[in-house]
Image 1 (cartoon, rainbow, N blue to C red):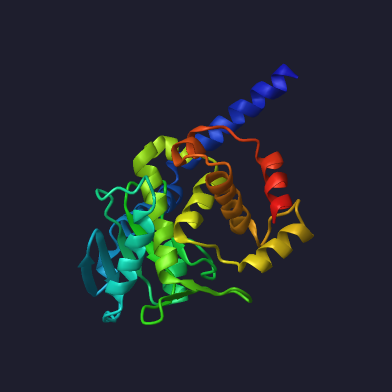
Image 2 (image 1 turned 90 degrees about the horizontal axis):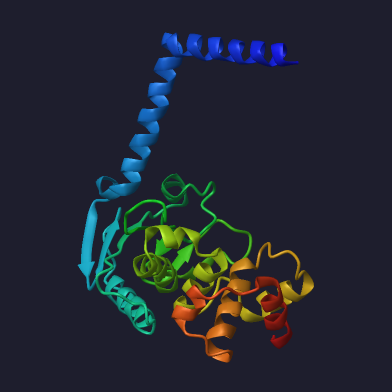
Length: 256
């Protein structure tokens, strides 16, 4: 057995050595590394793809098309939502990229098919927010979905900016460790609602409480709303205290 293991290890080492000496392998490896590095660079500095830019308050907005004047009202609405949050921080200056199409959004967000409304990258040290196809005049964002395919632009911007505020408040590494339900639930809370209408979300949750597919963010939102408004938990406590998620979800569901 020991001889077989030694033979296998030696064979694997010879294979790795031969592969590392292969010109084709090295060329392919270099192409992959360059492609990944180039894509990360594009995600960090996507301004080159956007011809129009406007600044308002703490926001910089980039668009591939000329701006509608309602963009200022949309950003004012976002600021009003954020102002109600105790972790709001004017030093956080989001850069918003209105992609104008599902295809462009899918390329920049890693969401195949463009089935989300907005996206930021917690792993990247940037304040970039990518927004799916939108209509600034109507304050709407659209995604490719059979149902519930639109949401207010101001709500999506408030949601995504709240993610940046959480990262600023608790730090890069701590932010990565915070449970998803807290981050998404609180971001929905600041946004003032979820993708699903209340009645629809409750119906889906009660019909299938063990599987959050299709209503997960609504569930997170209602749990955070319950803790902040019913249990009077502070935002600091929400993020710093440990909660038993399953029992908490059962408690919240009974109140709906």
